[in-house]
Structure formats: structure tokens, C-alpha cells
Amino acid sequence: MTAPLMICEHCDTVYRRRELACGEVARCVRCDAVLERHHRWSAGAMLALVLTALVVFVQANIWPIVTLGLNGQLVSARLWDTILMMWNDHSQIVAVLAAATLFFIPLGKMLLLGWVLLFARRGERAPGFRLAMVILHHIKPWTMSEVFVLGALVAIVKAHVYFDVIPNPGIFAYAVMMLLITVFAGIDLRRLWDMTAERTA
Ligand SMILES: [Zn+2]
Image 1: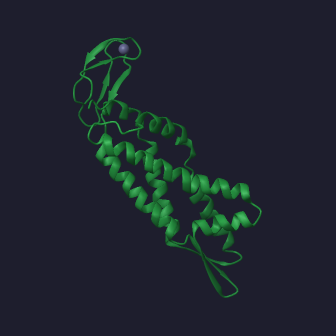
Image 2: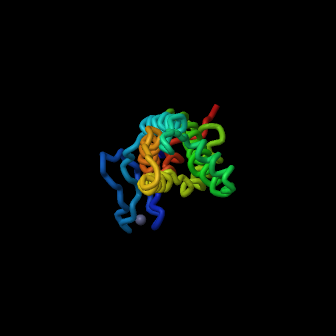
Image 3: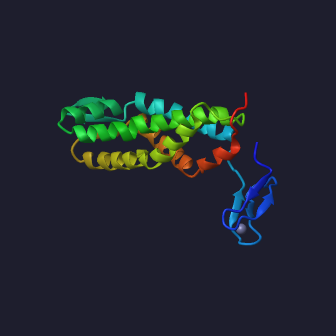
């Protein structure tokens, strides 16, 4: 699906493209600019990663995040319980920010990426490919699960002074999702443009 020729972005020299081996980088002979890097992640591998992240995301939202022990009573809280507690506790802005950064944006990102990759696996551009790529580019800095996990860990350690706080599986699921999202952040999605072609039906 990739074009047979490529042009150096810096000096306009034209090269014939060849398949790169793992870890290889093609450089321009005239100006030493990077032409192309070996693609470590195929579309299929990325899709598998997105699906894994989705499964973990569902678990992170179904399972309680923490259990609080108060006067001998144990209360388990899920992500949405915590968000609703914040909303009812006059912290609407924090509640909305938490819901957006921990739920809607990561979910939207995974669904969009999954949709694009589903077609990219066959070298095709999904319906709405252009729009999806623009949105993905803009929400890139807005997945703050890592901030959340760090904050939650600090809160658990601090709250331990006052109550019994038991971290629940949900928090570990969030930690795993955070790792997966960090992996996504390292993938240059722009090359999906090269990996796919407009469908000619
Ligand atoms: Zn060049």
C-alpha cells in the first residue's frame, strides 16, 4: 500500500522506497534528514493493543477502586461513585473534569483508534478517517489516567492515617490502562496516512 517513491522533506531529493529491517532508519544522502523509520507496530498489533486497553477500561469501571473502612463499616467505591460523590459535594467542576479525563476522553480515543485500525489492517481508510485522525491529534494531551493513578495512590497513602483504605482491583486495572495509553502515546499515528489508501470502489 505504500508509495514506491518518497521525497526528502528538507531537500526534495526523490528516493525509491525499500522495505526497512527492524530498527533501521532511512536517511537522506544529501542532507542526512530522516526519511523513514522501521514500523515496529503493525495495524493489527495496534488494534490488539486497543482491544486490550478497552477490556481493561471496562474492568476499571466495573470494579471498585477503593474500599474505605469507617467506624467498622466497609464502603467500596467505583469510579462513577467517586465522581457522583464529588458532584454532590459541590465540586461540580472537578467532577466534570474527572468524568471527561478518566472516562469520556479515553473511551472516545480507544473507540476512534479501534475504528481507524480495523480498516487500516486491510490497508483501507475507514469512513470518517480524516475527521477521526484530526480528533485523535487534538485529544492526544487529554488522556490523564496517569495523573489520576498517581493522585489516587497519594490519596490512599494519606487517607490511611484516618481510615482503613484498601486499594481494590479497579485501581490496578487503571494502572494497566495507564501503561497501555503511555504505549499509544509513543506511536506516531501520522503514518496511518501512509499505511492506508482511499478506497476505490
Ligand atoms: Zn534531503
